[in-house]
Image (tube, rainbow, N blue to C red; front, side, top):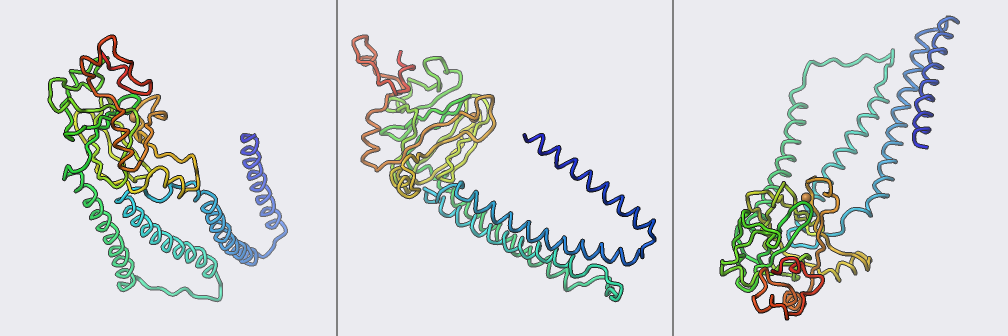
Length: 343
Ligand SMILES: [Cu+2]
């Protein structure tokens, strides 16, 4: 169907071009006044410019209205609100500039079409004009860049402070694992050579800080608390992307990247705000990292602090205690990621 449509448009255009050629030849043979013909062509072209302007802008406004509801809801994190504010300023500047320049461009093409009774005004250069169109964009762009950079510095300063609940996000082809630092808020050390089938994160079991670390296949965050993500990758570059919190940071093999942020709305509150009872936060991989990249994600839930504490208790330790691993022990809950890690 689509191919037919494309062919129809292509052949239709070719036919129009042929017709125009025939008309031009016919008028030449009939000896019509070339000047009058040129004038009529100019007039129709200039009217076409105005038509293009009106149709183009109308389609643009229509498409924007159509797709705006598909964009992200309001930010659910503290710094996310600031980022949304910057986006609004940027879009405002872009829209004003776009509408002024496009309307002038097509209107001038219409107004200043060739007129044999009009002499064009010649000037070689105009310093004042050039100064205006250099200085104004310079000031506007400098203001946009400095506000953006100072906001980014504010955001990254928080991760440099190392405050907040420490959670490791470990990315590999093609999933994420979350490791909560536990009561001491310190992650036990890990080393890639320690990676085995039963220890997929390569965690050091002899490190005292490991004892209270918890493993989860779901990222649950308490509302209103600072969260410190420590991001690692086992294989290739991935990217930890939490669109609703306006968080994105690459996961790079061989180094730890960080991102600190504060969730400000629970999942339940977002469901109410968006009017969508099925709304869920999500963490996605945002770097094309291989064949199953499209499916690399992790569910995210923001809950009240009390509920978070309760949930934390149900998560499994990185290395289950010896007695828990004894044959008589009850099996770990089915949804727990540690099932595969138990010795
Ligand atoms: Cu990935």
